[in-house]
Image 1 (tube, rainbow, N blue to C red):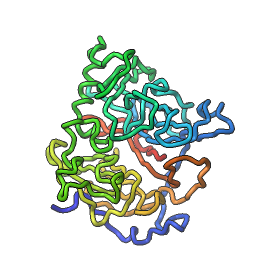
Image 2 (image 1 turned 30 degrees about the horizontal axis):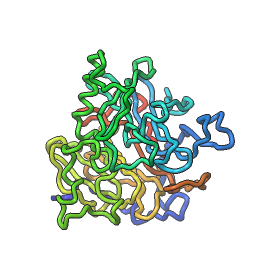
Image 3 (image 1 turned 30 degrees about the vertical axis):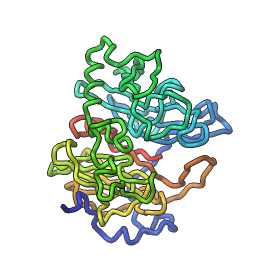
Image 4 (image 1 turned 90 degrees about the horizontal axis):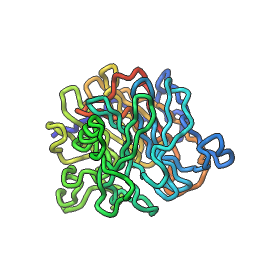
Length: 367
């Protein structure tokens, strides 16, 4: 079977991370705006805590507002103390001060935080925290949820998916809510395999996860990758090509596809023309009906940040640099990698579509 995506053009061979523009033409007209800037020196004008590790970003658009959610740790990745924050904007330029998505101690980070149901109920989700130990992808499974109301306030907190181990006694399960619309949206989220596959290795899906997360499904009984940690199936993003094929792309460029809307997937492989590394690769159809694929075109660095575009979702070309500048590292911490990286776009909607009705969809988000 041929590669589900093909990167065309000579630009990849020109990429030179040592150059400010990486040796590739820039995207004309692109602007960057800062949602949040960490500061230990003046926490009163940032997050009031002075936390310096901000990570695991997701983005959504609903009822005229952009939403950005992320995980915030004091110093090191996925290490307590930690909580999930979000900010909003009506124009993509000016952003609100960060607010807690869930009270500290309730939640852990995910790859995705926003889900809009077919009934136009917007949910905010995160992992369910059961201890203050370092967060482990392999142990995720429990979820918490609350509604994002039409007035942009947050509703009551429920357990969306019960963890295998102990659970907080003070939180009810979502189906105890008397709001039928909220319950229906929660059930739709839990039934959406493709949405939940965004979490590493399908850990939120149990037996429903993609079979390629299981080493026994592979020749030799081992997941492909360059170590036990960096394997296929981390941080998938998904989009439907013009011909209807559902394509998923994970870290390191592992790409798969499904012709039955996520029920079964072909064995993942790295397209011969896609050069990328251990940061995220983000793909989606844009509001003009075309496609964008945003990633770091290097196997060694998480810079520069590049975009290629496509008319059909299969053949991508015209690589342009979104950001080639490499800022200095302002704070130390565990598992920090410099560079414009960890891309997210507008959160995926149900039924393999995107929230294209929002006039602010042109915005993109980077860490």
